[in-house]
Length: 521
Image 1 (cartoon, helix red, strand yellow):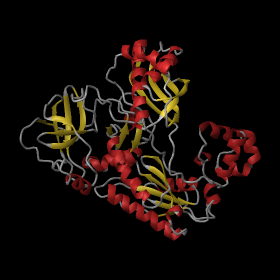
Image 2 (tube, rainbow, N blue to C red; image 1 turned 135 degrees about the vertical axis):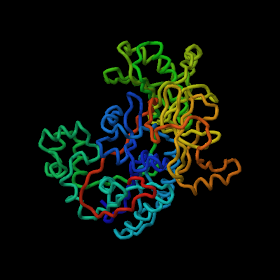
Image 3 (spheres, one colour; image 1 turned 135 degrees about the horizontal axis):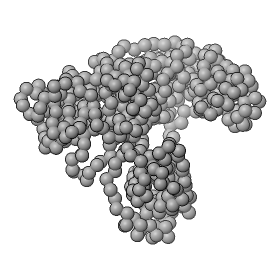
Image 4 (spheres, rainbow, N blue to C red; image 1 turned 180 degrees about the horizontal axis):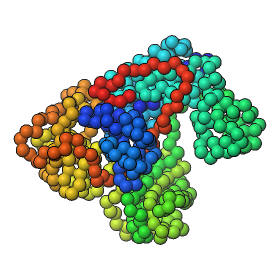
């Protein structure tokens, strides 16, 4: 434990949903749910307005719709989220060379390594300034926790939510931790928590009082000793600037169970292709190929094969995937398929024999357009060849009309697509409905959440002029009679994760002001 709270943890508030509210003025202050919006979708993030109805991350979207039927259900736009994340991580990098990103919206920062004076008053000011800078640069809010260890800094940021700052002062750690659920300790999942519950240990204080020997008896030497150290506020884990990826993988969840064996083989071949593309984009190779098969009843199995050396060759990976599938029964129906590569390295050792054997197989397997989205990507996979129009428009995604400019899709179905024309810096826009094959419509690109960022982008000679929303008085498409229709008929994107609901506990809190435009914080 450090003697000063110089480890900072930042967690953006309801990141995906807040970004959508900031981008879409008509949704500010309203319940918004981002995630898989098909019949088997899962909630990635719910705005605080939606959480009031009981909607939370990792919940089935179908259940969320029952709890909050009037929410806007939107597909994720990871292009936008990554752009915002880069801005936020850049601000963190100005504080210290030691920044450890955990996800697009979450990171640890070692302020001491950045030369910040190790005093509570100074680090508090640094945290407040960071929150102000993030708001100015992105229009979004983030919660900040400051403590002498990573575990406590994360707990502090959870207590600070939404849009606040909490400092855990040195010497108060045990008092703070004692009444918390044992699940607050990193590494304690449902199975470990149940083991501890059966032993009568439900809080962090109970766990600390049990003693190291008892925890080792219950959980084993490594897990028990580690848990005891964290329960007694001893966390010496450093902030690591570079987290080396251990695997590369892609997954698809299908709207209807796959029962045709040939279809399963084709889907796995396509997933292998996408996995290798990611592998090569990262400049890596891998030695172990893994397939994942989830059945209709949610039972999941994995199979793996270790090659003679690391490779990034598509033929080699496809051949390994084919061999692994040979031992899997898929006749009952497949809900999800995945392909991954582990044992990553920075070089390849070509497996010429497997490569030669895979050549005929690769040539024989016909590629087909994907029908579901990759887990971890979230944006709809292209459904037709490059340059052709999509088969359907997905709620939440960007669209552009040659006359009315930039907008976003509110819903689609029965040959029509409903579009709201507005921008992050405009007033709530008007709604219009068009035929899905209207030649004036084309997919759009996300606009920056801050107008100044758009103006900087527009200074580039290649950039178009900022699209201003016009009052659609002239007849061009049928005006939608409902000024605020609900999105409908979406395809299912991926199922990313979101930090859980924050707990409430003691600490010095400093609340920020609500976001301009009414974005919930």
